[in-house]
Length: 423
Ligand code: ASP
Image 1 (cartoon, rainbow, N blue to C red):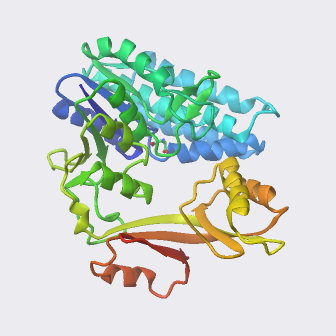
Image 2 (image 1 turned 90 degrees about the vertical axis):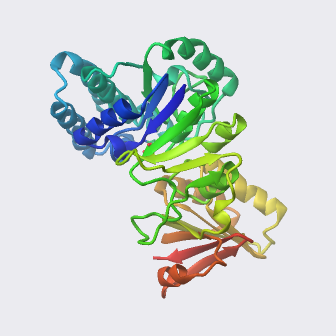
């Protein structure tokens, strides 16, 4: 069996959903499980909705209406009839009921996030599954939350393999022989039976979880680019395709933030030597990229650029001028862990520690609260993190990107150069 994953861009409109139907019709052979994300940028919209709901802002109604309208428009265009539409409508009603009620004061932001944001994936998969059945591509919708069992940590749950694998294998293996299975990426269920999510862009990881449990032949991630490129082609004119990568190279690229892959995706595939294809849903005949164990180290010769926007720089200095060594570092890292902040670059000097992470108001204020007793904490938004792999192989692009921008942090390893640039 094989696993296909379609991201938000591949289902962002009725036309895009029709194209998914076409890719499935022409590219799927044999047993298949399909993982699908929320449509277009709906996860961002739902994040805004959580924010408005949590802080009881008036805008929540308007945001909900935008979510409803977006999905209704697509179902109308796909000519999904009333009878089939009721399941989509039920989800919208359920979401509306949640946001109209007064929030439980004891519930945390992250719990509310995981209650609301998964509606994006649920709506998307209901619509796509219904459409595919309508055009004769028979498939069965399943709820990923019954199979991907996780820790209770909201927004960054860890998969419990011992619980999830037997469930997936036991229930889905017999089903998949009969028809294609279609499910949601990104979402799971904690041991407390509440929704969890796997972190933004987590649908790739979901595909890897199902592939691992079902001993898949391969996983294909369908993207709006030709495969894994050495830079984002929307930003770099001269971006080129990397035809082959080893698992380790892919893990390294994902670690530094190459948005083409979710960082946790590779490990389960590597453990079972399952090849991962990254291909274009716009032109499936193109070869794309394959990631496997014995791929030659193509990256040795290719300079890669990874850009992360919207970074906050935090500077933490001890108030008593004590050195930033083991004891202080323990306090600092505990605070990052408690606030759920993932660091993208860090550096320390005698009495200060500097790091950057993707800007987040709530996490930032939690960090300040946790650290301000013992440290002076300074937070500065508006930075971009640039990582260059194999930076020694000529640096023409690098000069033009940095231009006259201020470099706030700089770090070099034998293969990667990282620069935090002030916007
Ligand atoms: N919909 C989620 C997100 O936008 C998960 C995913 O697309 O992988 O982050």
